[in-house]
Image 1 (tube, one colour):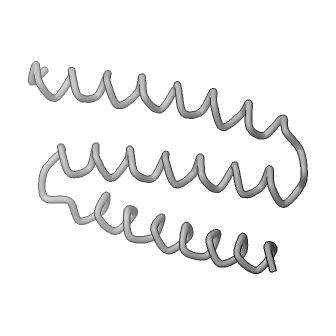
Image 2 (cartoon, one colour; image 1 turned 120 degrees about the vertical axis):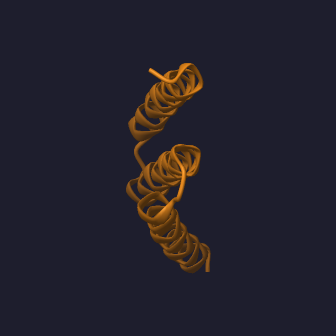
Length: 86
């Protein structure tokens, strides 16, 4: 039963990734694209966590943590870039 719920959650995560990708492509403003990029990275981190659950490997959780930190820094850099208007 738990495996079915994990696969259902992974499917819904993939759907969320497609919706965020659509917003990233169609976003009328750069701010919309930055938010969509941030959502896609969060969904990707969720996918890494699901892979860790499916494989039973804890090392993937470290990868997800590093990816989350780098994603946060990337969004901060892009936000500062958009704020200054370079």
